[in-house]
Length: 116
Image 1: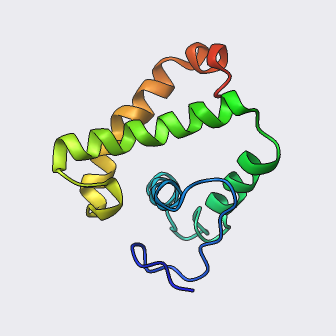
Image 2 (image 1 turned 90 degrees about the vertical axis):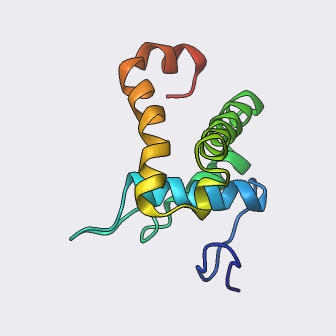
Image 3 (image 1 turned 30 degrees about the horizontal axis):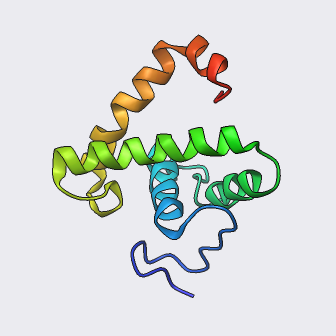
């Protein structure tokens, strides 16, 4: 099966809604792209994270994870009028940069919320 948005074959997910899985897929690819080594998509990181959410994480952690994905897409819509999934690579990176910077700047905040 080919995903109509990402064009990837075999996008299997158990926990996340289709839109959220596509968003996770995009975020993972931007954060850990293929270089001379495999990237997040090559090793199936989004599907692994989805399975963790479906079978292991608490409802609180799932809600926090969903909120992070939603915040990323809200930021993309505010800046570009569309989902981060639909943006080019440069715009995707620009949308994700503040999220990444906030996580690096406030690691204790992550641990306190249980989202580390």
